[in-house]
Amino acid sequence: MNATETRLLIPSDISSARHGAFQDNWKVHSLSGETMGTHWNVNVSGHTSLELAEIKNLVLQALDTVVLQMSPWEANSDLRKFHAGNPQEWIAFRPEAFRVLQRALEIAKETDGLYDPTFAHAIDLLGFGPSESPGAAYNSPSVQQAMTAAGFGQIKTDTQARSVLQPGNLGLDLCSIAKGFAVDLIFESLVFAGQKNFTIEIGGEARGLGCKPSGAPWLFALDRPRDLQIRQRLPETRIALCNIALATSGNYLRYHIVDGQPIGHLINPKATNEKTPLLSVSVMSQNCMDADAYATALFLMGKEQGLIFARKRNLAAVFLDHTGEEFSPAAETMLN
Image 1 (cartoon, one colour):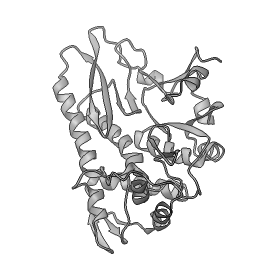
Image 2: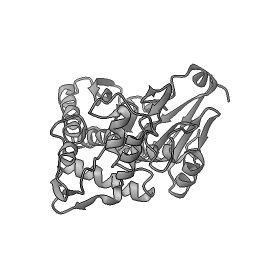
Image 3: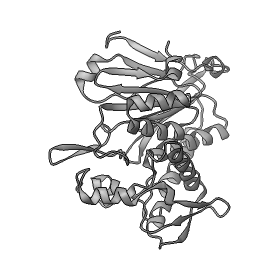
């Protein structure tokens, strides 16, 4: 297959997703804006008189909820309150932030700490946090010390009180899962409002329901590095985004140069340096929160271990490096 061809990934239940989507007097309505340092887009299939202002309000409410609770840059976010907490102090979390943290901790345990939401201080020192640090080298003493001090095993939660114990100078970073959760929160809001055919995308993380007015599926292209040689060599891969979510993780998406070396924002707590031949990993799942977190986890594992993990857990994943793409078995079954 050459770069001029297109590969299509099709969910197994796409026929049920198309039910009721055919409407001659409907059109696709598009809304967009900015959030979390990127852009959001929502496409809704509906009648020409669809109340777009109401839909946009639901979208903005969901985005505000995630930013206000989970942004490292928001002064009154639950994460900032946790960072400021005294040793052995229980910090109350709001429902959405607590829900996301719980899932992040579950995946941290599932991956033996390779995926870990407690590396906020190291991420900040690398230049990707709220302190606006110019960025230290990955192997610098300050970054390595911050990585050594982190670890999800130190976190204790009280589900009934919805609170989290601050063990002492531990930070939380949910950026690898919060954007996917924001997609899910918008999804839940639109479904509750009665919408049945739409797509949501925030900076490459996406989820769709139903199809277009014609009954054709929503098609969404997997993210690609900006390197023209890679783009020209690889065929485009698209997914029929009907009743499924998609997320992509890779250090080419966010990085800067320190001492002539590229430093990526995704931290491997078990590696002595952050270089990996992988360019990105895309994961397709029933919800975007899981897709977002698992994409990061698989990227940090590397292709060989990532494929083993994906196979054991039946994760649909696409691994991209300079040699091309490799599909997990669950993703292979979606290839058209």
